[in-house]
Amino acid sequence: MVPKNLTTDTNWQPPLRRPMLAHSGAYRWGLVIELFIAALVEVTRASVGEMNIGHFQAAYRFQYEIDPSFSPFVVDDFRDCINPAKLLELRAKVEHSS
View (tube, rainbow, N blue to C red):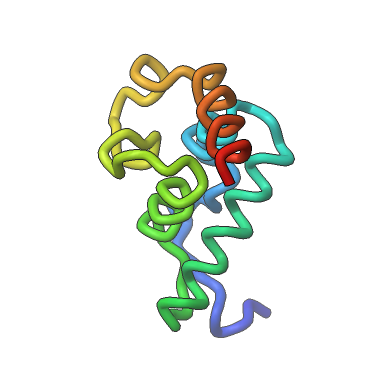
């Protein structure tokens, strides 16, 4: 029996299966988990019952303090446009400035 609040859409993929999520955390699963938690916080702030890509965009923007258009969640060819090593450098700068 499927609980009522779970989707039965066979085309749906949980965000962790999407390559953009792994890429956004520079393929470091600890960073991916932090981003996922931050997206859950965004869901809570918005008082909505369903997580969507916009929550990940907001969490990413907050974590890396960058323009929202420079995100693997909005760029179609994110693998070519966003360098995970540079993300780690940017993240270190953000953490040191805090």
